[in-house]
Length: 206
Image (tube, rainbow, N blue to C red; front, top):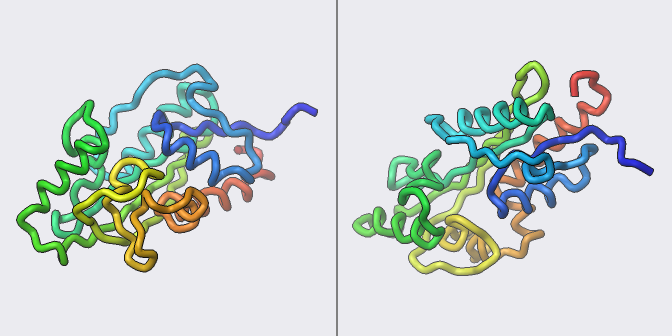
């Protein structure tokens, strides 16, 4: 039988994020499509000053390009001792075209002269869903932890290897995918978004 569920575009070019979104939205009552599935190769410049602005910009742009409802996220690491940096600049903190290892090294360099007990931090995620008529819903989630000097684990991406979850004694990159999807900032935001998606099934606008 053909799948007659409505389609939802997962509007990210980040393969790690895309894999997490597929897993987290596995039971959502929508057919999930990637940008590659719909033939979109365009990147969206994240020029917003906040995670909320960037997530909204990506969701609305890709919804317009695809003609589909689009879900986009912007996530960032906020380090208390750095006044909330890198925040919305997390992926570009060390410049463009750099590796995750480069970003981590740059971050640790910024923290070098700050006592390690002040290296508390949080990951924060904002999910934006752009519907027809450019109506946008926002959902947020966060996960608190601290930065450590030595990278640990290979299951994550970005700053995951140096983000320690003290209650678990593991970095985000040391967690099995199933466990990460229970505790991460993205999972918290996506769970809220998934509830909204399920509630929309009877809506004519969806």
